[in-house]
Image (tube, rainbow over the protein chains, first blue to last red):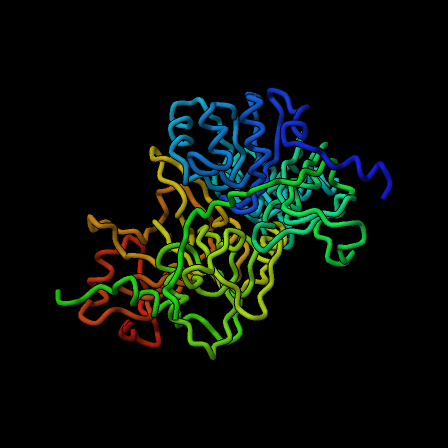
Length: 237
Length: 222
């Protein structure tokens, strides 16, 4: 293992986010509370950076996930597809303190993917004839109308993976994958927090979900809370 | 008038009759979720959840729930043998690309052209469209399951939707608690009505113009 690779490892969450300043645009991985970078979010809360623009599918709940940064008033704008689970969000949105850009979930995923893949915009059928398409270019292809959507990029991506090797190759666990792989590609600096570090050569190259080229910093997170938002079960048979 | 509206469970059961063997299906939140309980195992239906699952199974038994395995409603779920997991971008490529055969979802309003509104009410807190706009735009077959009228009796099946749209000309079929209707270029063709309700009575509580099916109208039995 070269020292260049070893240097991706960062000792603490606060150190990992040390250069995130007021007004930064962040992509934050996760779907609901599943697959969110909980230690990096907590570090942002402790650092107290303000006026953040957060691109994230949801906004957490009142006291967990991005909801923590809403409570402290650190977020200026959210770009999300669904924000229904958070009373703090609702209060700040209705009072005008918080700006929100609602984006269909598939458009959000593809805008981020495009941002990371060097594609500035793309045509999609989603939202044609709705408020989402207002003011945007449209074009007919093969008799069907499509709307032009712009790619999204960010200063930093904060993502959560299951495990990593020292090169920053990542694997996700189950549906905690969600938006994390695209976000890892679409920021100037991608910071990944993981539950487990494995040695060089221990990941099957074919089973790497996010290749290490995208990951600038790695943090080994400890004692994950991994809160469940809707615990739905059935009795044991 | 002597008729009984379909219950949520009966609606789900009727919606399940839209499934064909081997289909890949996405079920929306609410009554559509209940459709999963009505699927016969030998139908070989694969459920998609837009946060990245093909082959979603039922809720886990107590003690087996995992934070890393949820559905699009953020509920803990299980995987069936042969399931696959993928990213949100792959999931919506699958949806937008027309690979998910059928989407069943709820609606606040549907128009006779097949427009659907189900994501916002102006003046109320807007929570977001989630994946609904992508699903209705991408799915080759969109079936809406809904109450035919609002609680105050006002029609929800309209000539034009009044609420902001989720998608235009995308609904193929409506299954309501009073009738089943197919969306065509000519308008809404009624194929089934609940027993005890006449076509004229159905028309009276529907703003959209209804057309009797040339093949006749069957009873809408759950």
